Image (cartoon, rainbow, N blue to C red; front, side):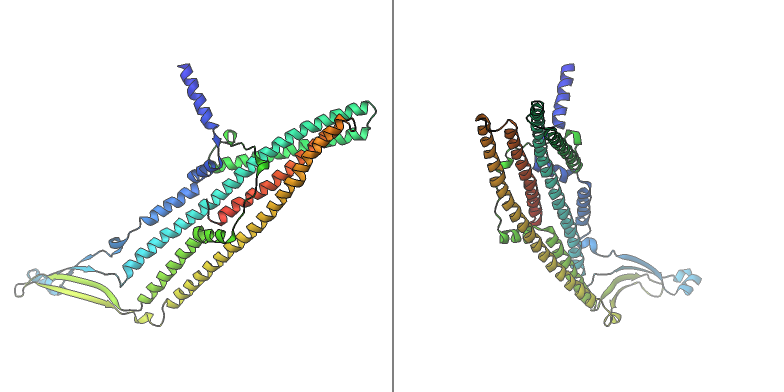
Length: 406
């Protein structure tokens, strides 16, 4: 029994600390976000609003008396009216109401899509920042170890009279700076973990992300501006929302124009009960609404202005998307060029410098501190590479959001 319980606890612990990929983090965030859940229920409520026959006015049963005073004095002459009245919809009103209800549901759907894309981009940025911060933290640990070795070597040289006290002080300060950088990266890592845990609904202490060891093999991709713009116009929910709002404005304009025409106000069928000297009878009544007070004062002009405003806003949104993509492309190209330069001038040259320093040490031309300093230059170059790579990956997440990709 104890062994079974231990097995179950170990399985639960393994599940709690399961490795989370970037796509899994995005999926969990989209699934657990309460704001998105509220928007989904709002969309469901909008899709369940009455349509078709559910928008028709209910019939009314009407009761009445004829010649009330006479009938009250002589109950035998009492005569009742029983009628069934109904107000039919105006011409095209039913279709307009159904279309407006559909556009409201579509608008909520676009709001939910916007929120999903923003949340997806936020989670991707947090995940990538955490992953690179983990790699930078490992470099900082290695830097501390090298600085400690350098300090030990300098202390030996000071004791041997080869170096002075100032050299030892410089080595101590460099070690303190390395530890400070490590502490800063630890703090950034904790913040990234906490924010990512909040987005994914996981406990911060149980959050484990996929390890990546090929950072320095990264090669920036190429982007075609026209393809990106086409993707943005096709996929961005902001544009779909603007289209839906313009459609609603067109419907409102159509409704305003229809209000200028006469329409049936009510239709009634009634039955009048009989008296001694006269039989019962059936009747039919129709009332017509004549909108004479709206012929001069109506909402057509206002609805037309609102439709034009919507179309201008739609064009403005499309222009803003194009400007956003152009800026992201410019920044991505700049970061990619810097990253390529860092790989060539910093990573490759600094690695060659380490080999050269070791060769010189073996030949007895330098002391043992020089190869350690050369290794530090490699670590520093890698830190710079990762910092620029972090910027590039954040820009890539922004470009995915700008083009409507999840």
